[in-house]
Length: 375
Ligand code: SF4
Image 1 (cartoon, helix red, strand yellow):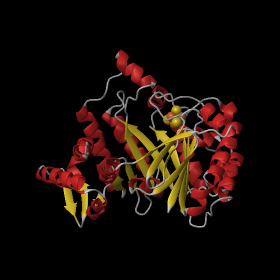
Image 2 (spheres, rainbow, N blue to C red; image 1 turned 90 degrees about the horizontal axis):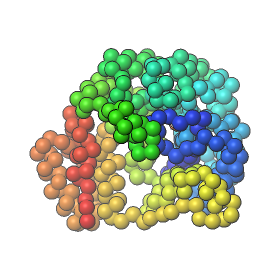
Image 3 (cartoon, rainbow, N blue to C red; image 1 turned 180 degrees about the horizontal axis):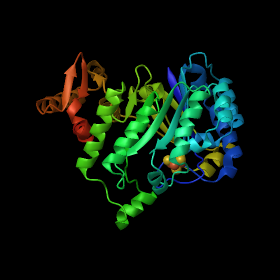
Image 4 (tube, rainbow, N blue to C red; image 1 turned 30 degrees about the vertical axis):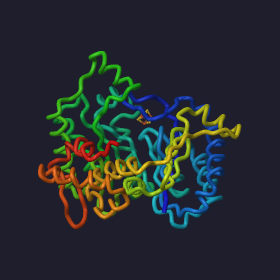
C-alpha cells in the first residue's frame, strides 16, 4: 500500500504566516502540468509496483487548478497505476474557490474528500492573516460542498493568534462543530522564518501568546470536540469515527509515499527524496532531463527518531514490538528513557502500545525530543 502526494504550488496571494512552498505566478500552470506528467512517467516503476490507497492534492492551493488540469494529472497517473484500491482522494481547497459547479466536477473526477482552509470564522482575523476569503464565504463554501456531493470534509483552524481573544476562540470552535464536518485540523500559529509574521515578531509588531493561553485554547478545543463526538487521533487532528485522514495516517505509520511537484517529499521504505523547491528549476529540470530531487538513505538512528516522532504524535501511539526493527544500542537507549518518562507519567503503556499520557499532550514536543537518540 502506498500514497501519492501532489504539490500544487499556486496561490493567488500569500498568507502572512505561511511557509509552504508556493508561487503567485499563475502563468506557470501549463508548464507545471507538463513537468508533473513527466515526473509521473519517470516514476512509472513505483506506480506499477505499488497499490495506491490514497491521493492527496496539497499546496499551495490545489483549487487554483481547473477541473481539466486536475483530470489530466489523474489520467496520467492512471496510465501507470490502477485506482481500483484507491480509498481516499483529497483536494485542499480555499473557500473562495468553491462554487457548485466546481464541486460537482471534482466529485465527477473522483475527489471524495475536501480539506478546506477556513482558519477562522472572524473577518478581522482573516484580514490580518491576509486570507482571501471572509467568514461568510467560509460558511457558504462548507454548505455548497455538502450540497454538491462532498460527504467527507476536513476544515483547518488556527489558534494561538496574538490578536484572538479566548471568547473568539470559543466561538470558532463552536462554529466549526456547528458546521457539521467530519474532520477538524487545528494548528497553533508558528512564526516561521521567511514569513511576514516572522518579520513582525522580530520588529515587535506581534508577540507570541503566553503558554497559558495556548494551553487554555488547546484544552478547550480538545474538550469541546470530544463532547461533539470527534476522536482526537493525532495531536492536531480530530475525526468522526472511521473518518481519520487515511493519507496522513499512512505517513504516521511509515508507509511508502510518492511526492510529486516542486518541494514534494517521497519515501520508498528506505530512502527519502525531496524535490527542488522552485517551480522554474523543477520545470526546467524535467524538460531537460536533469535531476530535480535530492535523496538520502535513512540510517537506523534517522528511522528510529522518525518512528518516535510520528508514533508519539498519534493518540494510539506505537506498537512496542515495532522497536525490534532497531539495533540493540537504540533499543537500550529507548528502554532507559522509557523508564524515566513512565516515572514522570509522561507516557503510558497499554495493550502493547506506548503513547503520550492524555494530560501531557501540551508538552508532547519535549517528550518526543527526550526520546530522540543522538549518536
Ligand atoms: S496558507 Fe495556503 S493559501 Fe495561504 S499562502 Fe499558504 S499555501 Fe497559499
